[in-house]
Length: 76
Image (cartoon, rainbow, N blue to C red; front, top):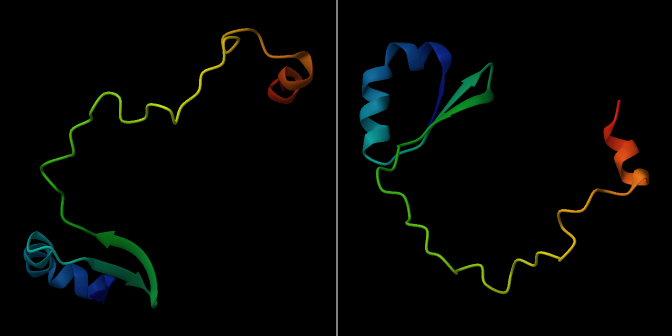
């Protein structure tokens, strides 16, 4: 559902009830979407150790200083 700012202010309680039911509400200014009201999900997925095994590679020299050619890009 898309509503303009005035309508969102006027119907905020109703819109929040709809969001609680799982609906997404887009708020627009002059027809341009500027915000999204979405429900907050209470339960987040548990992180399980080892699920990235084989996907992340840490080289033996990962903590060595960067070469000067790269360091120069970061210094102002």
